[in-house]
Length: 471
Image (cartoon, rainbow, N blue to C red; front, side, top):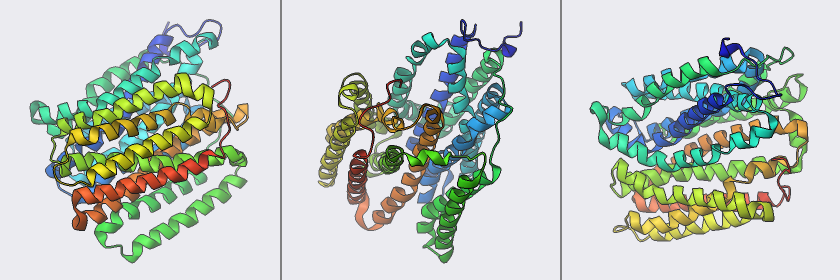
């Protein structure tokens, strides 16, 4: 029998369910690494291809922005076209886009390839999770998800080091290009395994896509992010403000459209939950700070302290270790006992680490990676305390039928906030840099992140007290 046409059954689970899990994990790791290690390669890319400071922002924001937009509609497209077909198209396309990134001769072509990567990554990722759920018997599903946490956590921790090894190793004279080219053989194998083993899942014949709503959302997002990134280098001409004003109007039009559409891109009833709205606010402020700080810390260590990409990866490892430890402690111990209070604790600890970092960086020349390591570890630990229970707490205020849609929207909000953080906080960093230098500019940026954490701290009070029982 052709395994690719086999439909999973709940009686015993799909025959090749563990192959499905392996393929989905490969896709998730590819996406996670591409979203993170490109950050480390930014200075090397700019030194090779040229471009202004905004190039460093676009390398990150182009991916996360298009990934966020794609996430909003990709699950619905999976229902319409078929999850297996969408996953294979996404993985083949993501692999091809990675090749284009690795071969890009100019910053503009690289950014264009990153846009393709983001869109195709968004096509791929949601389908994989849905197929895992449909391939396993309900009694075995929890066992199937056990590898996700450790594997994704390890990937996040090792990502900067892997990037540093690939860039400094200059394999076959490729330099930074290898961080993208490494995806090609992995993607080819993954695409074959997906074609060979992923099950055919019945399409939802009643599913519909609100094309106008999706178009309004995409246009509004692009019109907001583009001037925020490009405006500083252009001297903030009138067109940048016109674009942002147009973005506000299109976002308003999107809201009106969603309230009247029979098949909305984002279900308006989600925002009738006070806790869910607070969760969206929390995600926005928190991940704006996280993404902005990630960009700033990487650039400060490489360009401010003069570290190589590999040494920068090592210098950032304490934060990754802290995140992993915090997630374990929160998920296994604090989260079940303290509910939403663990978010308050996490924000306080993370902010304390950033304050410590600001004081250390404020000492100026002579500061090195060892000096900032303890503050990065502490801030990472606080961040990890937040990661583990966050989505479960936000979703606790929704009905059972709204959880799937609500979770997808939260993922999109997280990605959009990441793009917004790179745009806004990155622009602030480069605004301060000419007059203040790396140490003072980074210190100012860290204090802005502390302010974002304070805003997120207030939003926690409106979240549900406990996570979902079935989470």
